[in-house]
Length: 74
Image (tube, rainbow, N blue to C red; front, side, top):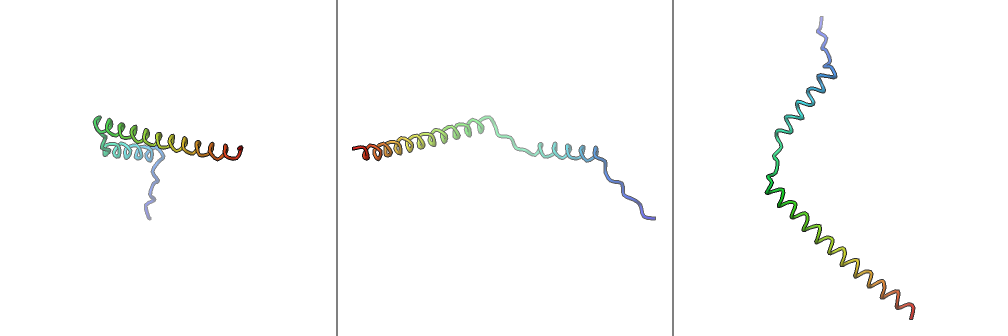
């Protein structure tokens, strides 16, 4: 007679899942505080540059719109 394989219980599946999660977390290479500070600085600079570019574009298009709108009123 063939042996019947027993299905793993829900609790053993959950336990196995969390064990594998812990194993994967141990493989993570965390950045050093110096790397984090450098990356933060880069992000802030890029945001400022993008903000200034968008501000300049907005001002320029607004001035162009005013020029077009005021031309039609004369």
